[in-house]
Image 1 (cartoon, rainbow, N blue to C red):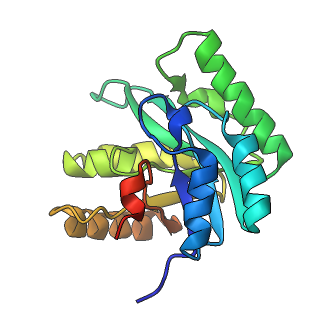
Image 2: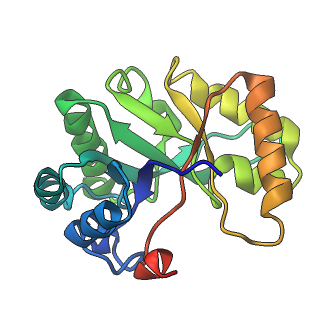
Length: 208
């Protein structure tokens, strides 16, 4: 069985109630278990970036800074507007600046979500992941709204030419095998690359 070398979608206690782990502890636990890279994608926050980066340097593993943003997808046919989480990873310093700008727009504007159109021409230095169990693909697949899913993924891909990844997450839930099969088929049909990303939010993930 292949071993996953990277963890791209970790959340820390900067995610306001969604996690209980510090960025430095994430790095320490990942290093102990042989991972080579940790991505921090806290909800509407990059506050853990400095702590993560410092701990990663000390442990000699790679740190990736990102965030998870609520994105408002516009109405599509009879389907009303709907919010889904989107993971954004900074590929460089310029990408980090964009992450800060997007988070600020949501917080200062007191928005429930960032309109999808707000990403236009702002993703040059970002990589996008489609979200895990509660993301757009998994949610619409579970509701069997496949035509709507295809339309919304195509709309999202327009903002990430060549750098949007369909996120695969397996939590050993009864329906996960069927869900993953559907996600792989979706990626094949739309020619989207896939990435395996367990969503790590608590210390329980590391317990044998």
